[in-house]
Length: 391
Image (cartoon, rainbow, N blue to C red):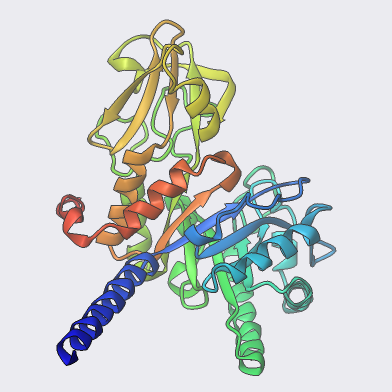
């Protein structure tokens, strides 16, 4: 009888160890998902909180120097998202301020100590009002006009000051409440971004740098086809850029690997009038009527049989593409294989996590499922990524 109990106890311990090991694997790398419903209300079950550790809700705006809600349904959506923490206590819900179209007022807001204080006061009120876990600053971009935004040479120092002062206020709040507040940024994956920011200083104030390692090729600006988010640089590519190069540049700029979160796009780019050479890769083309496509559109109108697209794999860049030789259409996108490679890269390089833009682009959960599976994979299956770690 004693032996039987002992065996049961040992089995219990083994089960606990296995559960603990699985938990450690699932939580060692953060998964950040941007959620951008615009004017729509989030629906029950739309967001799976069990496969995320952080939600960045996009976007809040800056009005009269203060942080304000960006859309009418935001209060309702914040309540929906914060309720998900009951299903996953590790889940954090942040609000992201700015974005490509919403960065108009950053330069003015960050200009003086008083203007920064006005913003920070409003941000603290905003986080309290909606029970949020922090702020993601998505200024696109300090010292650069972005999509026509005002900018100044002193933006780089003011960006640092804004984050330093936000961190100080967050720390004061945490000292009182014992609740950690997260401060993160969305960063452009370019040499120009690094030239206009002080990342060696910025990194000390933020919890993570969400590196936007996508939009490396865009039919609106690039006359030749290319990969939206190459993991590695293909020597034949017109644009000699990649996620690997960007990570290395940010590391050289002073950002610790543990604070870099690798960006993954849940969308692709589309070129038209592409000649049938090299299956359309790195060939002249023009923007398609819709120059981009969500993964949902790719999966339902291009990947299914009968649509005329063939899938190809760039082993040098570790990403796929589609080409319709009859219609001369080229599509750069992500799939399970490329996302697995990116997640393995993040683990091999000891990055803090991965992030993706954005949740609604793949309601099927296919790509998020690939992230979840890759980050649960045992380290013994990641030898190939380790061998590429210094590429």
